[in-house]
Image 1 (cartoon, helix red, strand yellow):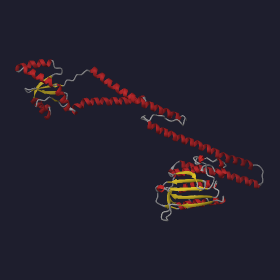
Image 2 (cartoon, helix red, strand yellow):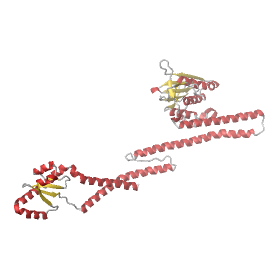
Image 3 (cartoon, rainbow, N blue to C red):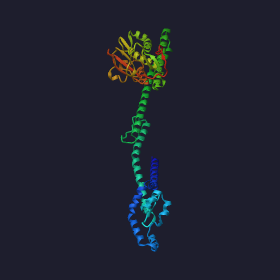
Length: 447
């Protein structure tokens, strides 16, 4: 920080010095007319006195009088005439001199003063120079710059130290640490960016911790059953009992495979929209394929699944641009969730909403979900109290996948109360541009 302060001070000091040199060298030319007017006013009385002095010493007396006058001149001067100075001045300034006006040379360092009898006095401008005073003045100038730079840098230094302390604490594991700066601070926007970055990192780390905790918890039960089943296989039992044990082990292996598949799906969705395969799909075909995939599960539970599509225009089928496999996977998860709680009926409905968005709704006539639990049902590994058992509540990843599918499409999913009192899941997918202009059938989208 000290090095930055020194550099800033040197830059300001050099810039000030350049400005002073520029002023001294250029302002005489830039403001020549104004300086000339000021010099005429200053030397008005001086010209009158010189003219009177030379009138008192005409002819032969002028030489000794001029020598005596030069003894008292500080910068010295010479006497000349209009013809001799014509080559030294511009045409405009020579005319002014001929008209009896004092004029300055090009650099405004000397003047020409005409007298009534044709004599022209050429002398340097009177500039009192005192090196000690000038050095003191420039020293005060440099000190003023230094003090202003220190004052300016002090507030930045203080705020940067706060930001540095917050970053060091955050890097040491205090994930809740944030930079607290005043809104008047010049680095307030930077601190807000840091706080937002810290918030996202904290949320990501906490999410990963929850995921690891949930994964380890979910893996423990099937692994324990596998270990117990393998131990039982070593004990002497009847062939029928051995087959039952083997079937149970295969079920545990399938359960592990299903869990890993769900985790891989969720992990892929967490990476964002890079894995989207957008197609123009028929909404009717998409819903029919999902319903066909769930027909056996619904029939086994003696439920009725109704499918409807709204928003047709002049009898033409409705199309939408999305990733059909991901959307079908989300709908399958929603319907499977509904089959666990529905009493008699489940409905799947699609309609076109505002700005061409596709709105997919899944209703059931079950007991519904309490308002206090609705915000958490989309979290990974979250189960309601009434569905703690894995065989009824699944792994707790289905609704998390539904939310990620909606998010990677730029949409959302929400939980409401159905008209029958059960749960209503509403997934909204906004209209997206079509990468390839083809219409695709999605008969196998849910496979």
